[in-house]
Image (tube, rainbow, N blue to C red; front, side, top):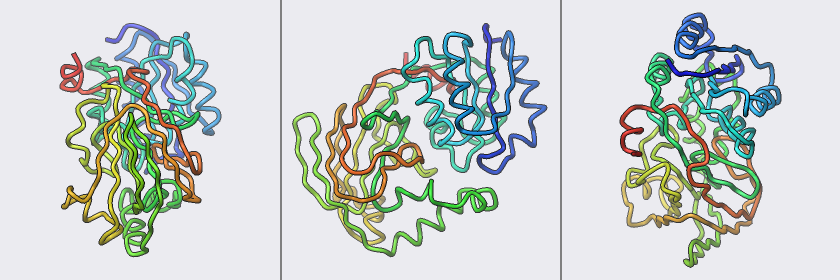
Amino acid sequence: MNQGKALFLYSDATGTGYVNAHLPEVVARLKAAFSSLEVVKTESQEQGCRLAKQACGTYQYLIVAGGDGTMHHVVNAIAEEENPPILGYINAGTICDIGANFGVHGSYKRALKIIEQGHTVEFDLGKANDIYFTYVAAVGTYADIPYVTPRKYKKRLGRLAYYFAAVKEAFIPKKVPVHVECDGQVYDLKVPFLLLLSGKYVGGFYVNKSSSSIRDGKMELFLTKPGLFNGLVHYLFFKSRTVKISGSHFHIQTSHPFPWCLDGEPGPIGDVEISVIPRKLRIFCAEKIAKKAK
């Protein structure tokens, strides 16, 4: 049992709603996993963020059922508070890349098992201007798919809704001019899309295989040259045509008129200063990830 008070926040507004279908089991197992548990169904994103902020210094654990967007807003609510709780993630969204980076993927039962086992890890956050993000910042082709895809399609088709949208964007040529300064290096390129990752997963795929850690104080920036399917083929099969930069601070200038995607949510437009905040928060994770971090 994890000693301490836990707050469990859930909503029926994310993903396919399968966690809500098994809510009695989820609540029963969480009650057995903590000294005490309060359960709240949130009716809005604003309410969830307010409760998450209030949990700091009151609860030792904050368990969230939702998708990447839900976790993104929770992280921003607690990142600058004193005594933030240890996070627990029950993947109830469409793809749930955040959870995958901590070994929390697959069914809700796996997520509950990880919480019950009690292994935790500190992890880095990125900060784009004044907004925190957990695992990805992207701009250009494909970047808007998570937040422009209608929710009704996500509920009906799951991750296929994203992949269908990606196929459409693959055949519309796009070049995004970027000026990048990173730890003394300067790059000027036109790219179909720009991808900055902490961890290994994005879009449901294991893509950043060379990432050393989610807690090493660095992120990896990928700049893919134009090509077939807006450079996607270069990225997947011809890595020599993709520039990869590892660093802790990035200044990126771009005239792209659409928002950056931060954890699947719309962020700032245009130029950004991105800093890596090492080991900012703690989260329940798979045992192998906790052992690797020691």
